[in-house]
Image 1 (cartoon, rainbow, N blue to C red):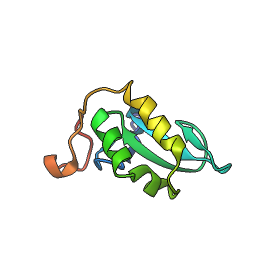
Image 2 (tube, one colour):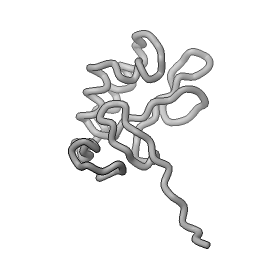
Image 3 (cartoon, rainbow, N blue to C red):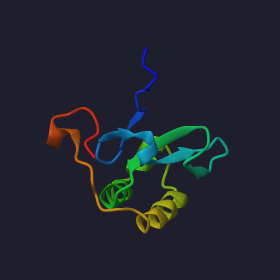
Image 4 (cartoon, rainbow, N blue to C red):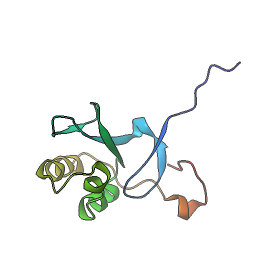
Amino acid sequence: MSTTRKPVVRRCVSCACLKDRTRMLRLVRLASGGLGLGKGFGRSAYVCRSRRCLQDARRRKRIQKSLRIPDHSAIDATLAAELDTVEPHNCRTTKETGQDFPVG
């Protein structure tokens, strides 16, 4: 019996790339009505830690749609702050690779 565990993968709301959840940014709609980053219980959306995905998610309002909330100024503020700390885009979509698992 093997002790290695499969990574828990999540899909990016922007590019639909599947990655290990530890390599993605998690935004959570909290029960109190606020927005959490990384931790907390509630509906969540995952985004790649890349400038391209964060900009696309912000522009197309993908996070608001995934979290089922109206325009929320906290989302824009959170994404704007994260854009300064991310790396260039390093994942390709599953359509480009023909694979159903993370590439990057």
